Image (cartoon, rainbow, N blue to C red; front, top):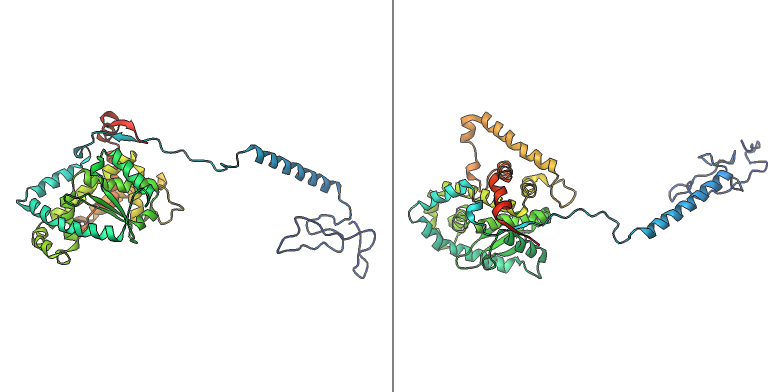
Length: 376
């Protein structure tokens, strides 16, 4: 002890109390010195003169401050963050045709629909009425993307069209529509410019690369000339009774081929997934889109492509689906509701896309004959 206390508790001897600056004093806690031995709770002497150890600490602190200041002057203050590497330039697929990316099921189901006598021409004449109404609704109630409205989306659209070799005169208009459901869709109005609609909820969920993959998917419908049958499938979904009177005459006809239309639409989506892959030029971005639309992006900390491990885990679910379907047997197949879906099951879409990414056909399109120049 440096000193002792008298019976009355007052310090005696040459010990003097001194408030210690620094660590023991915080905005919420004032640590008092021990009145009996002249030290605070951390054993530091509360003396009127600084101890040699305190002097050494203060000197070391001053030298450390000087070193930090010198480093601050040396380093570039304008770029304190480490920048991530940008994606390499993607190639433009000059001369790309619909048959280059059309899925075999899409090709087969399209031929099956076209074999129905008179249905193709009847659909083409009537669906233009529906498409015109939808176009008018979007041009009056949505935001038309361009150089001054969503310019970043306009850039993604132009880039995707360039990669898929869609001529400027055939490129669609792009609308952003306020809607809480993440979705996008395409319509090709007869003798009019086709258009794509993207919901605001999708923009809020996806990162920029994923949004471009969604746009490329919708461009796949135009590249593969899905317009007529896609409109017919939408009429079936809306229900003929909700449509303008001239269109209702198609109701009984489309009802009879409803199952064929739904099969065709699911097959057509596989072709469009390939268009998204050709623009992304690697499978993980479009697979990330599918996972997020299935609920996989709810816990993501920011808008970016999901981690590879999560995407691979989602792909593994396809095997579990196969096993569950095999266990269900005949009764389970009869109760299966996938025949009413407009899109293939997400895990099966992701697996099919991953398979095509590993195929010789994809590599040949991307590297052998179609890749002609680097995209800006």
